[in-house]
Image (cartoon, rainbow, N blue to C red; front, side, top):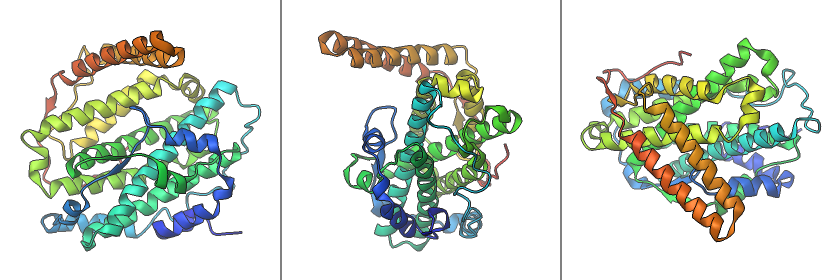
Length: 371
């Protein structure tokens, strides 16, 4: 038996293993991963020279502690099937659940791999030992996650061609500070999402309809560590979390929360099978993420504000209108789509202008998983 991505000690090794498995790729899964919409994971590129110039000496103690933890590689060998992997009856899975769960897996695989691509490129281009070492370690983890999801997809007769995605998917340029905000939030909200599902299924195992959820605890701890890394990167330049940049932080917080809410409401059968109400789940994840981001952000969104939940619901209905217009097609469909997009934009602006909660950022940034 060939080597598994879970045992790879570098991103290069992990990707080479997946290239060898490319004969299992499926056009549908890859085409789904290739889609570029407001709600689908994107591939990013940035100013790598600016990243390479980062000096971590001012946070050396916290930095070295994190790097040592990641180098210890506690999850090596973890992300592969073992005796805890139950048989999945894909053939008899309820059709709508199957469709939504496959969409969830493909979206998750794409998101993990997008991080891998960005981190690997920084490692390749950079000369700063501190930064390249960090990005090599994070790319290693993300490659394992993507490979593990692809293993789950292969049971359903699908597989995302990750090599093809690297070469063919559209890349979006973000300035480094925007990469920090977006990726930090992606990693921290990823932790909050995975640990919330894991704890829920730990208490309600009858709703665990697929074995991959058993791996979510270690998985989300990788996400947590990656978020810690970006918090420290932001700490190297205090201006990133002060002054006008606070408005950008508010924008990314609002965008990430709103995107999650709308995307999750597109998968009602998936959440019903988990025994999770999407509104409850969203509030739990937002609450956890807001607490976690206090480590570096001087503001958090007021998710208990009277306008917050009703506006999210209106935003979701506008998204349904957009989807309906696309499905309808023709001039009438296009007009419906444009009207929905304009309505959604107005609701996003309404969310953005809800007053925030302010707080003092602690002197010590590092956190440990606590949920």
